Image 1 (cartoon, rainbow, N blue to C red):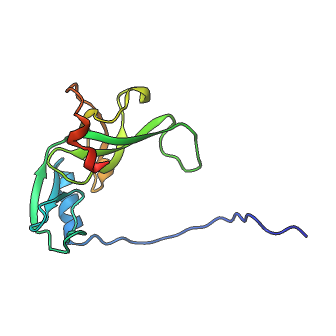
Image 2: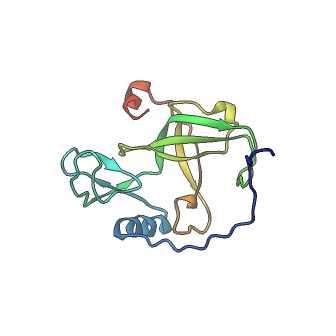
Image 3: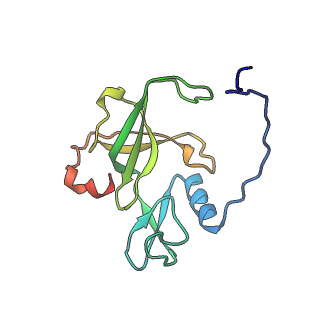
Length: 159
């Protein structure tokens, strides 16, 4: 008798996610096509999406910081292989985008450009869906904005 190595079965999971105060404020801003992070009062790092407390200092992050829609690609990966449940058709680029004024990059898609043109230091701007929803996916993708690439030294600590 062979050992069981795989089992497939239809599954349905129903759940409700309740956003806390900080996430609710962030998602409310997204509905207005605004990106708002929070600053740690001790180390002054700006987190986006915001966090209620700094993971480094454990201080409460209460100061909201409005961030621009522009940033820098710090790292990226090109997805070329399809997989079940995939929302985008390959190839596409996933990247860490360090928004100007933030200290932690956020993971998103780089679009509007051939994936072979995506690179570290690429300057990008958010492209929004017509009708934002309360989710970071309201930003369709980040696209190159024509600015000169950022110097590696300006973002290397975020890689």
